[in-house]
Every structure is written in C-alpha cells, then in structure tokens.
Image (cartoon, rainbow, N blue to C red; front, side, top):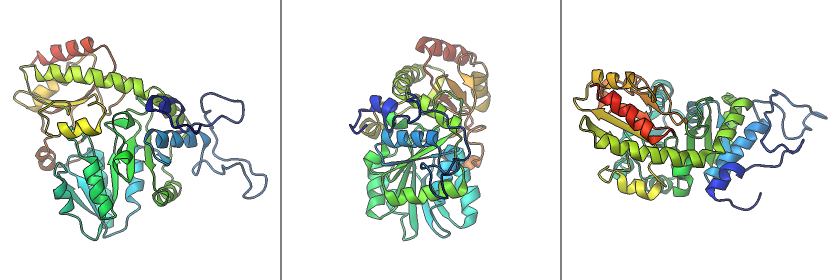
Length: 385
C-alpha cells in the first residue's frame, strides 16, 4: 500500500504486504529457524531465523509505519532494544540520560555499560540548558524517557532533539509510556524511538518484546548489524501477538486515556491522597509541553497517600480487588505497583528518592475496564488507611 494512512488505519494496515502463499489476512506465524535455498546464497530473502523472519519483518514494518519512520527493528525485549542502541558506542564515549528513568534502564547504564568505559551523566531534562551544559566532544547519545517512569515528568522532545542535532549527537527516546498513539518522537526530531512493546503496543500482558524505529539509513544498518550479531531477537509467536495487539492500539489508547483522566481527577480530589502525578493537570510542571507533543495524557498515574509511608502504600495496593498488584504496565487490565520495591528497586535509595520515588509512591497503569468499577476499587482500598 503506497497511500499514506492516518494513524487509526495504520495500526491495522501500516507497512503490511499481501501474504504470498495463500492470501492470509493476518501475517502467518513462520515458526521456522531456517529456510531452503536453491543454491548457496540463492533464496527468497530469508536465510536464518536469527537474521530475518517474515512474521518479524511484518512487525518491523508496522512500527516504522506507526512512528512515521523508514526502518523498524524488533528485539527480544525493550531492554534488549536499549542494549543494542548503546552498543553502537565505544569506551570513553559519553551518554547524557534523563535522571528519573525506569529502574531497568538505570541498571543497564550503571551496572553493565559503565564497566565497559562508557560514561553516563544523569540530568533533570526539564531544563534543556542543563543538557547542553554537559555536552562535550565525547558525547554520543542523549537518552530521553518521556513521560518518565514513574514520576510522569514530560521532556520537551523537540527542544532536546534540536540540541542533539546541532551537535550531531544521536537522540533516542523511550516512548513506552506514551505509545505512538500519543506522541511520535521521530516527527519531533529524534534520531531513534524505542518501545518496550510488552506494554501498550502488544497490550495484553502476554508477550515480552522490544521495538525500534529510525529514519536514518546509517543508524539502521548499525542497529541491524548488532541485532543480528548479538542475536537478542523475538520469536515469531511473540511478533504475531504484538502485531495482533497493535491492530487495536488506537481504540485501547483512547480508553486508557479516558479512564486515566477520570482516575487522576478522583485521586486529586481525595482527601487521603497527598500528591498525584499526571501530566494532564494544569499545575503539572510540564503540562504545557505535554499539551503540545502528546495527543492526550494517557493512563499512567502515580500518587502518594497522606503521610507518604510504605505501610500505607502497601495497605492500599494489597487491598485492591480489580487493580492487580504486578510488574509491568500497558495491558488491558489495570495494574498497581510499588516502584521503590519493584520496578525501581535496583536504584540506590538516595538516588531514587531524590527523583521523587519515595517509599509511599504507588504507580497505576489504568486499564480499559469500566471507570466506575475502578474508582470504587480505589475508593475502598484508600478508605482502609
């Protein structure tokens, strides 16, 4: 299909090709590790499952279409995708990263790549000048996560990308919390957009997968080489499940956002809640940026009960009936988590709390259930403290 599709159509048809075998509407699951060749090097475009797979190719074309990119790559997880991006760089290179990021990303930076001689600078990216002040000749990557996990800070992608482009520095954006439905970083000037597709893109808490989209051919070639050489690729079943999930991304994200707005306002008006973090509020420090670069404000919310201690937080999440206490986010079901002891436990306490991840913080991934059932569930659990 050569016509450029609008987003809602692109989730279903974007980047897809007619299936050559029997005209299957859904891309088949090519459950094979290798492919027949007529003569050495003479094949139908596929040689070995680590290098390419038709189901994976369909997914890679899909993410490039959704992010308005030219190239897509799929990995075994979001962290595998991030790992491949960082592997483009060398010892003594420097990376500037947003300071309040996902705990797994922090762990990858500080416990894996730091020991290989890559220097990481963590900075509050609310002020773009603080990013520019850290740039040296050794700076090769600016790592952005927006909205941030779990503090829901919003980084101005356009401003950071302009700085990176001016200095010929790669700007990569972790777009997991927003999904391409809410924002498209490549359109705002970023070099790379990355997703833990485990979350909103697949959307059903049944697979683990990472996706990357880029426009630059040289960047794509580097990442494709690493993808094949390191081998952290997803299996065809995981690719199929993610493709299936993407087909309802637009309607799911609309409902996530609608429910998120209702839940955020309910929490803010609750006398037992001290603080609610959600970029849709006019008093959110990055609300104006969020209004510009996001279609709506999504279903991710963090909050702290009054008193803000761990015991109160635990009492709430242990007594939820519809919200499930579990790792991850972005599925159709509502989830609750305690970042300090779950997703961000690998970050030292003093660093974690400096960014706002205190012991009393609860993170919600608001699902697509009936909004009133979700409010009643939160209400009964909060009233127990």
